[in-house]
Length: 79
Image 1: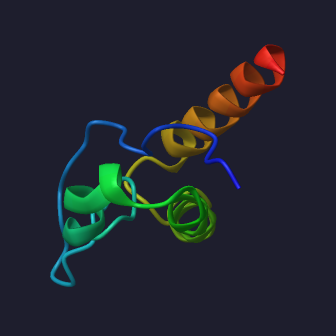
Image 2: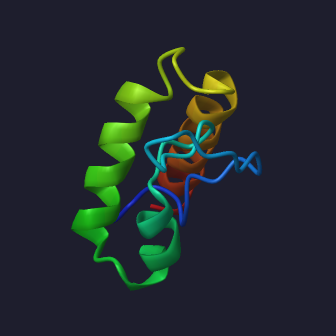
């Protein structure tokens, strides 16, 4: 499955004690390896972070959810 957008970064990089970004929900390792991940791996990460950080628990959940929805609409227009 092709990921909806290249990366879920909303330009607020701040990590908690568990090394998870408070804004996008990715681990430091996931952020470093993002370009090398397969489409399925990226999709799995998007699914996880939308549930954890796009639902009101993240630093800016609305921005994360809006990024995902905007990319989804853009992808539909291209199809």
